Image (tube, rainbow, N blue to C red; front, side, top):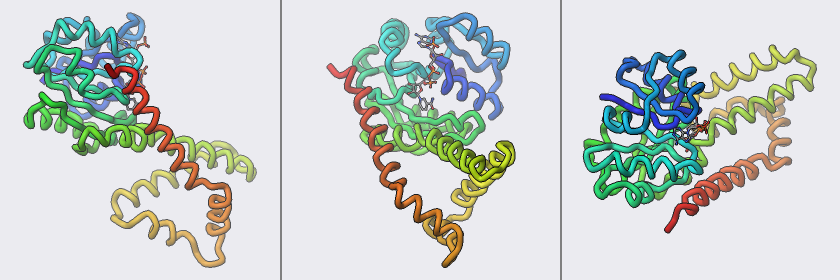
Length: 268
Ligand SMILES: NC(=O)c1ccc[n+]([C@@H]2O[C@H](COP(=O)([O-])OP(=O)(O)OC[C@H]3O[C@@H](n4cnc5c(N)ncnc54)[C@H](OP(=O)(O)O)[C@@H]3O)[C@@H](O)[C@H]2O)c1
C-alpha cells in the first residue's frame, strides 16, 4: 500500500517517521510540500520522495491531508480534479468535518477523519478515527491498520471529534507544559536544570507507564503517593488553592470550542 502525506509539517513528518519506524519502505511513502527546501530536507532525512499533488493522487492508495485547517481550500481545489470514489482521503485537520471534503470532492469520494497526536513520532500516538458517509468498513479498517502501526487507535462517532481534538490532539502540549513548569520548580528549589529535567521526565515516564500498564484508576495511584501528614498533601493543597483542576477543565473546553470554530469557517 502506498501512502502519500499532503503537507509534511509537524504531524505529517511524525506520520512518515512513525511509518518508517514501523517497517514501511521509503518507496511506499510519498509526500507533498510547498517549499522545495523543506521537501529536500525531508527526502534527505527519510529517503521518501517529495512529489506534486497530481503524482501523489495517481500513485497513492491513501492520501493523508495534514495541512493546517486554514490552508485547506487550495488543497481541496487541487484534489477535486484528481480523486474520486476509488480514492481514499484521510484528513488529520483539526475541526474540519468530513462533510466539507465530501462537498468539495467528487461525489462518492471516501473520506475518513482522524485526530492523531505528535507522540506518533515515537510510535505512541493516540488516533481517533471517524468514517465519512462514503467510507466503507474495509476502508475504515485500512486506516485503523495504518495508524495502529504508529500507536493506539479508537473508532468514534464524528460528533466526538472536537472533544478528542481538545483532549488527545492537544493533550501532549498540556503534559509538556506541566513538565516545563515542574522543571522550573526544581530550579526554584536550587537544583541544576539538567537534574531537575531528569527527575521530572522520569517521573512523567514512570507515571505514564503505571497509568497505561497497571490498570489502576488515577485517583488510587495519586492516593498511594499521598500519605497522611506527608509532603504530597501539602502540594495538593496548593494545587487545589490555585484551581488547577478548574483551569484544566476550562483549558480543554476552550480548545474544544476552537476546534468547533475552525470547522464553522467552512460551513456553507
Ligand atoms: N501538531 C499537532 O500536534 C497536531 C495534532 C493533531 C492534528 N494536527 C493537525 O495536523 C494538521 C497539520 O498540523 P501541523 O502542526 O503539522 O502543521 P504544520 O507543521 O504547519 O504542517 C503543515 C504543512 O503543510 C504544508 N502545506 C500547507 N499547504 C500546503 C499545500 N497546499 N501543499 C503542500 N503542503 C502544504 C505546510 O507548509 P508551509 O510551512 O509552507 O506552511 C506545512 O509544512 C493540522 O490540520 C492540525 O490540526 C496537528
